[in-house]
Amino acid sequence: MTDLSQRDLSRIPEHKLSAEERQELKRRYDEFIGILRRKSGLLEAVKAPEKKVRPWVPGAVAGKP
Image (cartoon, rainbow, N blue to C red; front, side):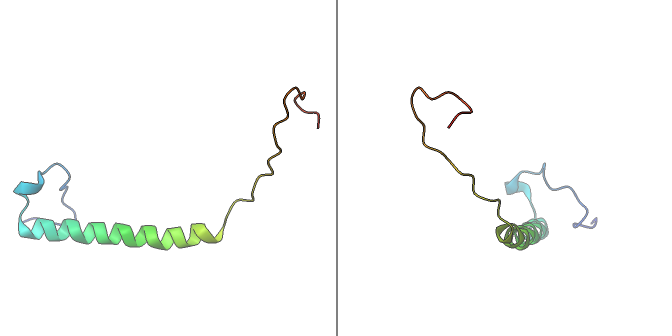
C-alpha cells in the first residue's frame, strides 16, 4: 500500500475508507485543529484598535461635526 500521509483521500467517499485511511484522516484533522488553536492564540493577543463611532444626526452634512 502507498504511504497514506501523501495520499489524496479527499475524493474517496467516507463509507469506502479503510480503517487505516480513517486513522490518517483523523490524524490530519487533529494536526489542522492544533495549528488553528496555536495561531488563534497569537491572533487574540494582537487586536485592532476600536473605531470611534459618532451618533448619527439627521440633517448633518457629511464631514462637518
